[in-house]
Length: 389
Image (tube, rainbow, N blue to C red; front, side, top):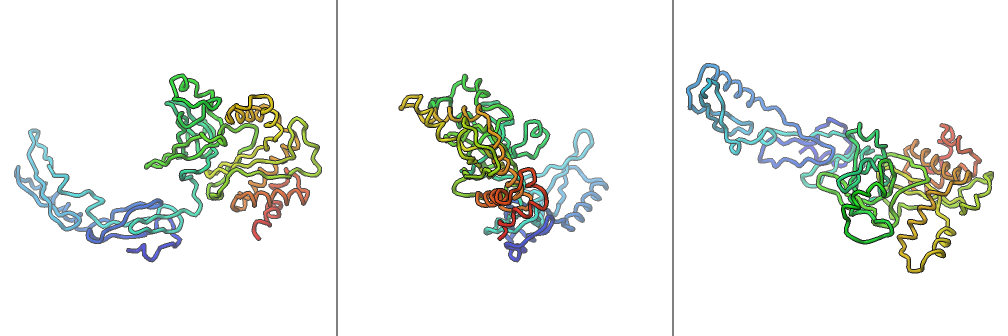
């Protein structure tokens, strides 16, 4: 087959990867990024023309005509005279194979990428996939686009609800009600009252972090937020990048420390902290940036509640305070600097990792570049120079 010489080679859409000339050859299995095309068989066309000529001359009712298939075998079809004078063919579907089984086939690439072959399975791995294909355990930064049927629909492209309705190719995941934590961390069976109160947890337009729990056979993703690290996102900035720029790593929750410019004002005493910024790297291309929750907040909450209070209740109170406490101007500058650092890496098509983000952000601080000037073309090249060494 032709795929033997194309293993790990670059191919373009429309390029023939493999051909199967006879049934005894064994054929191939179609993988991602490919499609099968039936090669026209000239002998079949000639035989079909002969059959049409015979029918036009007028055949006897009940006579048997022989028709040659694409593989060279003969199958029988009976022509019967109907009451209204029309002729109909009665064929045994089990005796005659379908079009994709009875003729020469060829496998054609539908995307640009490299060929991967495992035994008979031939796939084309795209160089820059635009649609995220999930795996179990992946971190997702998504947006709620629908509520109903005891589950939420989560947009994996982080598109707003208005855009998701018109984009038929948008990838969506399913977040069942059983896959979320109830308020207060209560562990019990979900009831009809919980179904009616689903919008109290997440509603259309909300951003959240979740994890892929299951990948179904048709490619649909089943998500969950049962871990205390996952949940609704507030008071931050979302950046979307191509999924190919975010690689899988051990930890997708990272903290960047000390990114505050020396010219910035002092941190707000109510907010606390020293300018640390949390970054959530979603493998679907969604990157969330927010301030690091100060440890003083957690200490104050623990001092006001019972020592036996569950951890889930403490974290929910921390998230509520984070969502209701304003972000100081200096912290906004740090968040915007990290956001523009991610944009710089996206513009030069560089892998987005905690190290590369920190290199660009610290270069902008050391060189005294204003946040508003980071996305200028000459600055993008200059700030990302350290990632190309």
